[in-house]
Length: 465
Figure 1: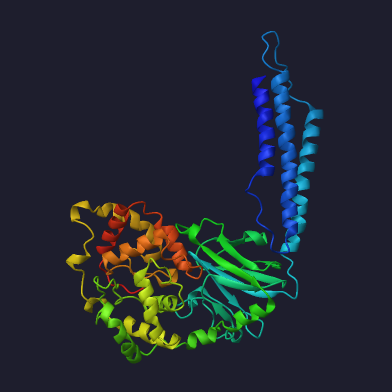
Figure 2 (figure 1 turned 90 degrees about the vertical axis):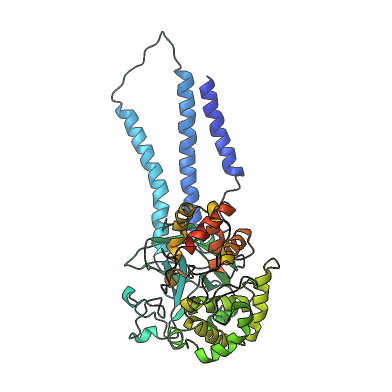
């Protein structure tokens, strides 16, 4: 009797929790109400079956409870019962699957007036490509991917020259306009999903998958990867901003074409050296960095990373937190760089400096006495970092991860603490900083930070990313 009552109470409790649970659908922001309806049909079918089967179980437990004067009746076959069970099960399965088949047919039947956007996934980032004025995307090939052509676009395809390339984790879409999403992966399986849009689809290496939607609510929505794609899978996030047609057109006009990206100047080293004169006081003549000014070593860092950080400081993406006094100083100093050209020039000059010519580590670099450092623990912890920064901490362009080796230990420790405390990386435009906040949580104590920084200090290779 007690077991039967417990079963009934569990069923009633499950039903109540289902309706009062805070974990429910996010607000719908696209045309795919049919997907919600299909899920609800599945919930009702399975819910009814769950209640009926559970109540039947409780009835059987109560009705046929143990009685030493009764014996079980063995019935190896009951055709009537089997027909009923097969028929009812078939009806339930049909009720769940049929709506989904109709929705799937709509999901892959793209309206003729749809815009086209390509989503490119890689560990652990999203990038985007849009057709230019010709309305067609150019050919791509994995073998064509380089630092200057990260999408692998074929320069000999005339349709590719005006393609709009967006090499960051943020996409804009116009309100109430259907869009076909093409999905391509550079490395492993990924899955593109935006919960509010009710859309998800795998990115399969070597092929292009697709779906379509019509966003119908203005707002900012998070892109997630729902395929376990590696160590940093949970950091593979991005954003879609849905906005009015006028705002979308303004944003689109600011994006660069593939041709413009190839024609971009890599910077003037001579002019960059002149601009760097204002950096010498803190970072040193050879960009070796100074602990007394809190300035990191810049020599040996790649041009693309220097350029990104200078842009972040100038645009207040970094250095806008009052707890980051050094960042605020840098944000003010970038005002001497008038425009993107000046940023490119000084980045080109810093990129030309050799790490070997800058001063090596000094006694002041030591975090703690050697007896308190556990290099083996640091090596174990750094394995999580090596997926992006490289086994020798040499940095990886295709992972958007800077070089760490040959950097001052006190600076690395400070930045890890800043990420953990949300002093750095919180700005919504700092997508890589957002990832670092999540990854820094893997270091659970100051000892872990000291160990991993000390281990990075043993990686003295100067391999360029």
